[in-house]
Length: 363
Image (cartoon, rainbow, N blue to C red; front, side):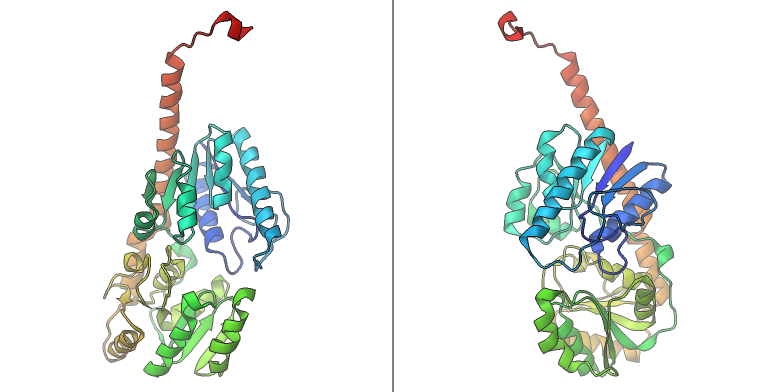
């Protein structure tokens, strides 16, 4: 079995900093390789994932600026990758909607992992591809998308990359894009009301520079509220591992929220506002709290300071049980085997029937 994993061309696989989809592709590729499955990743030329990598565009291009040329580049990459994968791969697994359009031109089975938030236009678009095997990354996303041929496979992470830190320091952490929907300003509000220092890590994309300049930067003093910029894996381990809690005051329906699992893998509980997948990822009193408001977040933090509510080892154990890389890889292997089995059955059925054409048609 040979699997094509097609990633967008803008960020290397694995990412050096930001890139949830690219991290997913890298970890799935490595997990499949470990199981003895042949994998080829279509990404950009800066990718370092230890499997076969093919690329059309050599250099990364991030952050994106929302220009038409970027959509054209993504479509061109997807078309090239699908055409190439048709020649040698058994299953074509796309991770961006552009790739789906080319499923019409091949009998190879397609798997599509839906990384995007629920949008009406995308839901309608997916409905045109009932033969594609869609994978939603949360139950909330699947119910909202209403896709007939779909299943849920939660993301899993390689726990060897995340260090359990049992001794916490007296600060809060926030990691994510610096954007209104991520609630960076709300994390600052919670820290100020709770009287607990906050360390913020994340990328400032051009579209949200004004938001950072007006609602975040004026409150950053370098002491109580710190902004440390982008965070690679080592920085994530330190920032998340040492903090007493990670704040996730999301303001949209988050499709999954991988950083929540990363924090818990470091033994750090997550305090989150509800939205999208949050209630599937955070288990109350086991790996954190799902709070109804920022005031409830403040109250929960007070309880955590007064009582030893969470055991870091128990928080990490929850991730080992619910969001392991092995579990995710097993689920995708099962899916690949199923779609190949269905294809084989279709071929067998069609091959058993004979079609007779009139001589004029043959001529």
